[in-house]
Image (cartoon, rainbow, N blue to C red; front, side):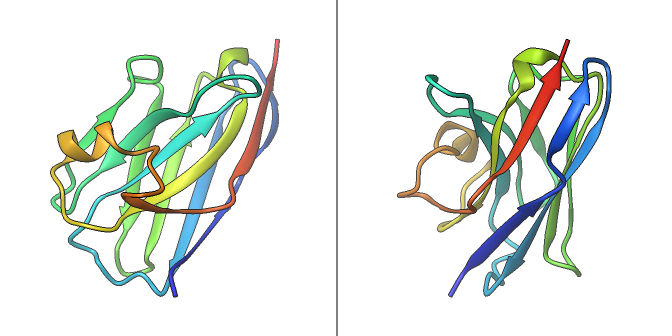
Length: 129
């Protein structure tokens, strides 16, 4: 059974940094993509970043240059380093792991879909101005 557990969320002031982690158990498909999406109250889910099996990463325009996605395959852990945080980054952040093999481009388009990804329970990020 696949389980994704996010951690590292919290409350920070604008301009601050946080590092999210996603520990995956029961998921051995290192050749599939993993990523992060977020959802703020009253808003739709938004793909944030994805990384594929060869390390190619893609980012939403809103976070490019501020966020960095990475993974440690040996530890089966995904990370999201978030710098220069803004109040509009406040949201519940979810980890996603692909159910089938896709390129990073394909994966980013379905990152928020529970049909195509295993998803965690999320971790809250709150950025105050």
